[in-house]
Length: 86
Image (cartoon, rainbow, N blue to C red; front, side, top):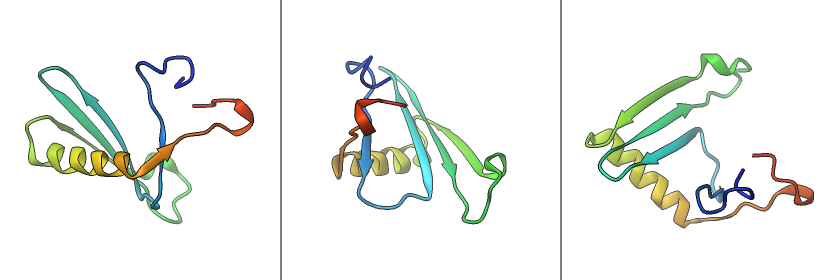
Protein backbone atom coordinates (compact mmCIF):
# COMPACT_ATOMS: atom_id res chain seq x y z
CA UNK A 1 0.00 0.00 0.00
CA UNK A 2 2.84 2.38 0.72
CA UNK A 3 4.00 2.12 -2.89
CA UNK A 4 0.48 2.63 -4.23
CA UNK A 5 -0.31 5.56 -1.92
CA UNK A 6 3.02 7.22 -1.01
CA UNK A 7 1.30 10.53 -0.33
CA UNK A 8 -0.81 8.94 2.43
CA UNK A 9 1.12 5.93 3.76
CA UNK A 10 4.75 5.68 4.86
CA UNK A 11 6.47 2.61 6.29
CA UNK A 12 9.74 2.56 8.22
CA UNK A 13 11.76 -0.10 10.04
CA UNK A 14 12.97 0.68 13.58
CA UNK A 15 16.51 -0.06 14.68
CA UNK A 16 15.38 -1.56 18.02
CA UNK A 17 13.22 -4.62 18.78
CA UNK A 18 9.65 -3.70 19.63
CA UNK A 19 7.39 -5.58 22.02
CA UNK A 20 4.37 -3.65 20.85
CA UNK A 21 2.87 -2.29 17.67
CA UNK A 22 1.66 1.30 17.30
CA UNK A 23 -0.87 2.79 14.92
CA UNK A 24 -1.23 6.56 15.13
CA UNK A 25 -4.12 8.42 13.54
CA UNK A 26 -3.70 12.17 13.66
CA UNK A 27 -6.54 14.39 12.55
CA UNK A 28 -6.76 18.13 12.31
CA UNK A 29 -8.39 18.45 15.75
CA UNK A 30 -8.12 14.99 17.28
CA UNK A 31 -6.55 11.57 16.94
CA UNK A 32 -6.01 8.18 18.50
CA UNK A 33 -3.22 5.71 19.13
CA UNK A 34 -3.74 1.95 19.03
CA UNK A 35 -1.15 -0.05 20.99
CA UNK A 36 -0.92 -3.83 20.82
CA UNK A 37 1.48 -5.51 23.21
CA UNK A 38 3.16 -8.73 22.12
CA UNK A 39 4.10 -11.46 24.55
CA UNK A 40 6.95 -13.91 24.06
CA UNK A 41 5.86 -17.52 23.75
CA UNK A 42 2.29 -16.59 22.89
CA UNK A 43 1.31 -18.18 19.61
CA UNK A 44 -2.30 -16.97 19.72
CA UNK A 45 -2.34 -13.30 18.62
CA UNK A 46 -5.88 -12.77 19.94
CA UNK A 47 -4.50 -13.19 23.48
CA UNK A 48 -2.23 -10.16 23.11
CA UNK A 49 -3.29 -7.04 24.99
CA UNK A 50 -4.55 -4.03 23.03
CA UNK A 51 -5.38 -0.47 24.11
CA UNK A 52 -6.71 2.59 22.29
CA UNK A 53 -6.06 6.09 23.63
CA UNK A 54 -7.71 9.24 22.33
CA UNK A 55 -5.86 12.51 21.79
CA UNK A 56 -5.68 14.76 24.81
CA UNK A 57 -4.81 11.95 27.22
CA UNK A 58 -1.39 11.49 28.80
CA UNK A 59 -1.25 7.96 27.33
CA UNK A 60 -1.80 9.34 23.84
CA UNK A 61 1.04 11.82 24.40
CA UNK A 62 3.33 9.09 25.76
CA UNK A 63 2.84 6.74 22.80
CA UNK A 64 2.68 9.55 20.26
CA UNK A 65 6.04 10.86 21.51
CA UNK A 66 7.47 7.32 21.41
CA UNK A 67 6.21 6.89 17.85
CA UNK A 68 7.82 10.17 16.79
CA UNK A 69 11.12 9.14 18.40
CA UNK A 70 11.09 5.72 16.72
CA UNK A 71 10.08 7.25 13.38
CA UNK A 72 12.97 9.70 13.45
CA UNK A 73 15.40 6.90 14.36
CA UNK A 74 14.18 4.40 11.76
CA UNK A 75 15.03 3.72 8.15
CA UNK A 76 12.77 3.62 5.14
CA UNK A 77 11.14 0.27 4.50
CA UNK A 78 12.53 -1.48 1.41
CA UNK A 79 10.31 -4.31 0.17
CA UNK A 80 11.89 -7.65 -0.66
CA UNK A 81 12.18 -8.32 -4.38
CA UNK A 82 10.50 -5.01 -5.15
CA UNK A 83 7.14 -6.30 -3.92
CA UNK A 84 5.41 -4.31 -1.19
CA UNK A 85 3.31 -6.79 0.78
CA UNK A 86 2.13 -4.28 3.36
